[in-house]
Image (tube, rainbow, N blue to C red; front, side, top):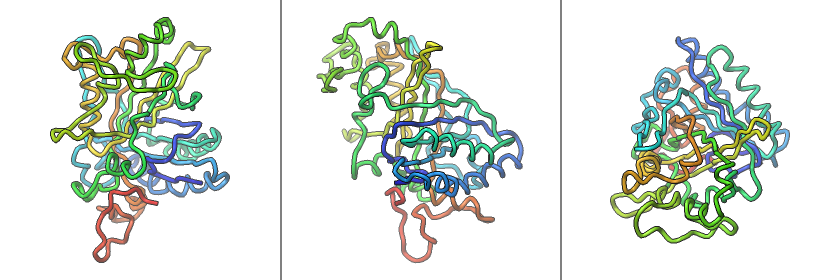
Length: 335
């Protein structure tokens, strides 16, 4: 089936494209982007109709620096630029990027065609900061050899973990998005015994079984990325990470992309990875994986994007209704 636009809970597919763009100066560029985003659902429908079973979807995120210029509305309450995280040994750096395009499908040609049509509409209004093509690697493993995304919420838990609700009514139905592009020192990682790799990750390599948390000292990646709020409730994010690489160029990596209802959840994950818990004892995966990008966006609902095409596009109802009567915004994804 075709999953359309802003379907962040669409299934992990065989192919993905991550496109990071910066907006050129001037109102004309903003107007071009606005028109392209308003037409995005039509583009995806046109391409996806050729093979609905390929599950084509496209999610767009908009950064804080261009939000008002592009949408004409106040920004989401928690949206801000990526905040660098400086640890004693490693730093999660911020890099340029005003727009994120996240394409997914079981067919690479459908991703390519959607990207081509979208860039035709954006030509002259944006410049490309990064373009990464990802692929599914065996049974959803990263290039380090471990299953990725095990801790993702599933079923009815997905909307509550990923969709903004009535706490920010204008932007209800949207999600905060953080991306980082990691490059792996695969030769050094591969030289480690499997038992040591498992201690770094916090799971067994073959069957993906969770290991016990370390009682003290340096904690595993799994433990450091498990976030609990002040009430003791574990807070989830949705990861759609994809491996990428070029053996000929000696490049191997993982494109991290996390969707969440509250931006602070991912920010706390990064702080625990880079600063450490306790401080000074960083996530050991960083000894083998370097983040070369860092960007933050908000992915509004599909109804919000569609409404950008109207002359008075302000505050569209996030539930996709006409805003008449007693309908209340929903934090469930549009069907």
